[in-house]
Amino acid sequence: MVPPTAVANPGQSSQQTGQQVGPANPDGPATKEPAKDTILTPRFYTTDFDAMAAMDLRPNEVELEAICEEFRKDYNRHHFVRNGEFDGAAEKLDPETRKVFVEFLEQSCTSEFSGFLLYKELSRRIKTKNPLLAECFAHMARDEARHAGFLNKAMGDFDLQLDLGFLTANKAYTFFKPKFIFYATYLSEKIGYWRYIAIYRHLEQHPESKIFPIFNFFENWCQDENRHGDFFDALMRAQPDTVRGFRARLWCRFFLLAVFATMYVRDVARKEFYGALGLDARTYDKVVIEKTNETSARVFPVVLDVQNPLFWERLERLVQNNAQLSAADASGAPAPIKALRKLPYWAANGLEMAKLFLMKPIRSEQFQPAVR
Ligand SMILES: [Fe+2]
Ligand SMILES: [Fe+2]
Image (cartoon, rainbow, N blue to C red; front, side):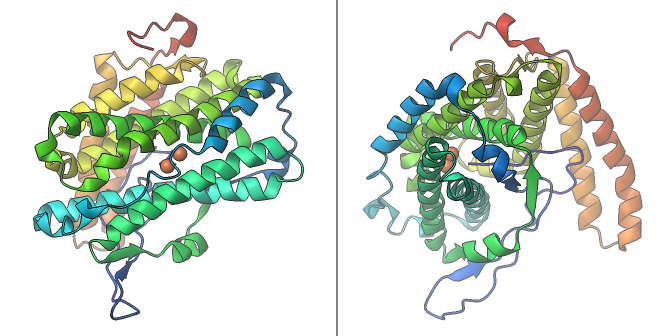
């Protein structure tokens, strides 16, 4: 799972999904044009493959080999098999829930697929020069393909299908140096783990809110994401300069903030989906952010002070600014007028993000989470 990473100006909610277009084959499902690109929609990444290939893993080779051995076991080989529970499940959703649920499926499928593409390409490009790393990426690509495929099949229950070939060819790819790929993907895997497990545990307690059988699969699913996160943890330890020193501390703060703020703004804008599951989007995000922050302290040199009430107040200001930006977008005004209306909110977001970034972080060695 690879979510968005940068949120200096979360301009638009990704609720503005693409138009459904007619089926090419009248008997098949309609293909769904991917959601309009915004800063909040999942990114697609590319990186410096030569630098990845040349990476010396010796400082942590034993752990990486052990993780690769876990990947080889392929625990979820038989997990993602659809059963009779899916029959007729889509028809049971009311139109409003159906709409927000399809958006959730689309966003999740795009995230999983973006992980698949990155890992697959990495594995292919470094195969001969760095076989251990290449094998790990191949196993992770296998998992992400399974996740994306399973989500896309669920979209099929709603007579929709994401055109993954179109997505591959037409998405803009963001270039990140390897160490930035490590921060971003580590965080996205770990936050993915906490997101899936939090929903799963909530629905275990409230089975009446299980609106679709796909949630039954989340427990084993999130273990894949957890293992992927552990792989990047081990990889950063093999390249200790990525998590050591002043610059690394600044970058870790930046990525933590970008990932947390983006998720918070996006999820609050989509609170109807969480509401349909009987969850409050803000409470859910708070738990996920606290847990991910806590987990990140195992490998990042610093984490954010998410216990500080100011942190949440500032995230709320981003939410408010984002609502104003969406309102300006939704207005029928000509583009230059829209831009003028949006300018103060962009500026306010930039200022709020700067304030959040400058908040005193917590050194990981001083961090004492209640549960590890
Ligand atoms: Fe995944
Ligand atoms: Fe993953």
